[in-house]
Amino acid sequence: MDGPFIVIPFCTRRLSLLSVFLIARVLWAAGCPPECNCSQFLTNCTRTQLQQFPADIPFTTKQLTLSDNNISSLPTVDLNYLGGLVHLDFRNNSLSEISQSSLLNMQMLVYLDLSYNQLRRITHLTFQYLTNIIVLKVNSNKELTFIDNRAFSENQKLQEIDLSGNGLTFVDVSMLERLPHLRSVHLSGNPWMCNCNTEYLINWMRRNRRIIPDAANVTCTFPDSLQRVLVVEAADKLYSFCHRKRQFKLREVLYFCLIGPGLFSASIVLNLTFSLLMAHFKRIKKKELKRYRKLRRAISFKYSKRPNSITQQINAKAITNGIVGVGPGHHG
Picture: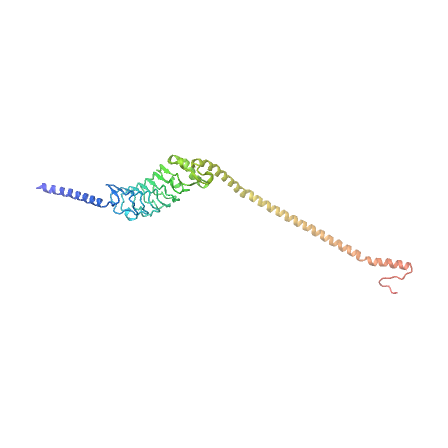
């Protein structure tokens, strides 16, 4: 009596598992896009002239290859259904920007290739949900000129980054210093600026040459005097130039802080001395003018009486000679 009651549940359980497997197999088989080739965990849509992200990609896909197409955007919904995706190859498409919600459910992704696209900038939100990413390739995006210094702040497991062949003249090296497991970063093919403002970046490249596989091809583009000079060689030239320039600036500071006030004080003393001399000179001139006026009055008073004395002398001579006198008060 016990046998049927034991065998029937066992067979039922096996049949239910088999049915689940068959349903999943049917769903997986029905889910492969017609342009692509699908296997158990791989969906390959390479060179299929796709203009947009394909629909009906199997949910079981772990590796998705969409390279060499003309897809211009990553969808928000279709891509996030693939929460188990660990490998995404999206190279050589027409992607110009990445919406922050496009990679919202990509926490399992460890490999992302976005090379040979048209990306212009990478912000601190672009890869914020890729917490398990290990390999990131964003090389050969000729219009990529800006990477935010917080771009990889949430990607602490990053080991390999390819930034070569872009339009970068400068990156904040702190974004690389914050990655504890970084072991390879490609930097060649960018028009690097080599001046005092980028000296820290240049020195970091020299110190970490061992993790820059293409260090022998990382050259300066600006300024013209350092064009095509290896960055590791430009570091020494920049050090002597920039530090001499800083010493010159220090002398300028000392001049303005010490010599400047000294000259200002000296000018005040000279102005004060000149003012005192002018005041003293004016007093002397005033005294001389006063003395001159006094002398002039004395001379004027002396000569004002000379006509009377001359008249008296003429009258005296006239009387002596018997001539009638002339002059005031005489009546003939």
